[in-house]
Image 1: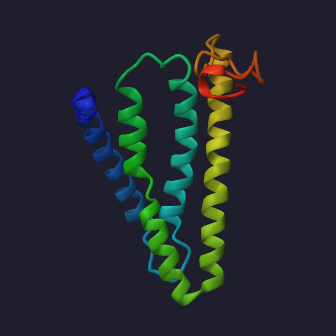
Image 2 (image 1 turned 90 degrees about the horizontal axis):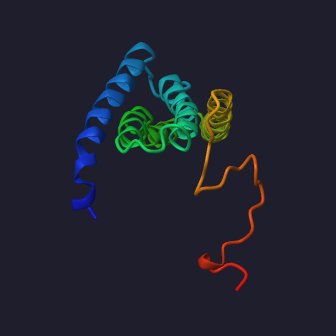
Length: 158
């Protein structure tokens, strides 16, 4: 499998470097001491989820035929920009000083991330649809066929 996708490694690596530099810049502007809300990580993760939602609307629509865009932007840039490993570490450190704040941070991060991804996907779909393009998943336009018939080839309704 790696051999057939070898050409994707360079775009992912380049995107990861750019995303990591953006996150580093954010943590430089908003440093975290370990006993307060880790704003840089929270903002990176929530804004990354929002941007990933927008990106998915475009790669499922007008940019669906581009091979390198999703690996570069999605896996590389946004994968390097978001930092759920730092989120876990910061929650652990916060738990030692302020357990209630740590729990709030964990819940707020997850709920905000999911909400941001949904908002991003919704906004992206609006932009794509307003441009006259379609957002298509597996050949199905969800706006035209919200409840498609089961596909017998996938083991459903046999």
